[in-house]
Structure formats: structure tokens, C-alpha cells
Image (tube, rainbow, N blue to C red; front, side, top):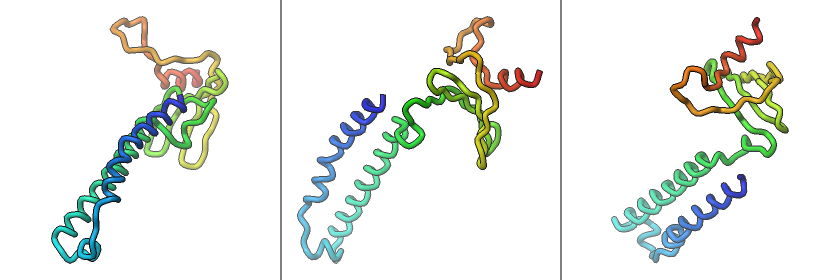
Length: 143
């Protein structure tokens, strides 16, 4: 999965590379560099907008592909429930075993090792086939 994401990111960079090469290879003269003419200001503004657009595009792609330190091999986020501004309850899967964790700004606590793995089911109109509800796990431990 990570290899596919890296290949997509590489192809996006390959698409953006001709734009960067064109911007870098633009002819420049002393008046453009010093900014003495309106054309110099326009060239500088266009270059700035192009670089900022490229940065935002690559950040968007990285966010959509979920690239970063949170994407580790062997650890998978199954469910996530926000309880407050800095408090969450998450279900993670490590080596086919799932754990319910309480996450705050200061610490992470193991709330429960789940006896059976949960899966996300698509929403249906059937009353008997209810989707997974993380609050039911929290209430289950209080009984």
C-alpha cells in the first residue's frame, strides 16, 4: 500500500516538474532581477503564485494519501471517536489483534484488549445489521 502511495506521489511530482523547469529557465535580465520594471514585478508574482500552488498541491496529495509518520507498517487505525478538544478513543490493530486506547494530550492508555476484532460495515436500512458503535464498547466495560 505504501509503495502504491509513493508511486502516485512520484507521478504527481513528474507532472509538476515541467512547470518548475519552465519557471526556472525563464530568461532574466538585470531589470527583472532588480524589479525596476512592471514586467519584473509580474514575472516575480507569477513565479511566487506557481511555487505556492505547487506547495499546496503536494501538501494536498500527501494528506489524501495519508503519508507521514502516522502511517506505520503493522499498525492500523480501525476506528476513531473524538470525545473532547484533545481527547479521543481509538481502536488500533496490531498483528491481527485489536486494542481500545484512550488518547489525551499528555498520555495514551490501554482501555481494553478487544476479545473479537471489529470491522467497519456499510450502513444499511436493516435494524438487525447495526454498524459498529465505539460507545457500546465503552458502556460494555461499565456493566
